[in-house]
Image (cartoon, rainbow, N blue to C red):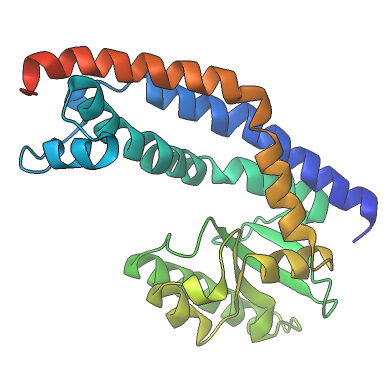
Length: 238
């Protein structure tokens, strides 16, 4: 892949993060109220004390909010909006596929063959039902290729995991990998671009987007902690 194409992917990744992920994350944070949480009364005071050293309403609020906004909320947003980024990737690296169960088609920078790829977010993001679905789509495409006498090889059907390490892949991914290649993180992006460092450049590009939103994020976080603390004063004794 040419350098200008890699730069376009980087810029599209940054735009995706700025325009989709950050706003969705902030919106989800702003909606949080006490009723949004399943409070375990046996643990909440311990967690507040563990985090802040006391069980004040502010500490209780932080113990509830921090895990949600730093983990569940933004990971959910990333997964739900993944197709937006995949579409951007397809515009540069290949093309969006019209084949059922295939997200993008691209020329592999390693072996030069056309790859039919279903993209997934991370190494723990599929369940057993997804395995059956993916295997079914790939198997159907293989059968069609045989009937149409197309030169499709089994290694041309792949799952591309956008981030993570191969060692982190769940058992569900490993079951697919017994038949069809699963490329994860650096390996996937190397096959797409031919550049072993591209994955790390993309990660850095996403992290660079944070600087412009730091003040907004800090302000929103403090506002939500203060608001939840007021609710906690009434709902949970300190």
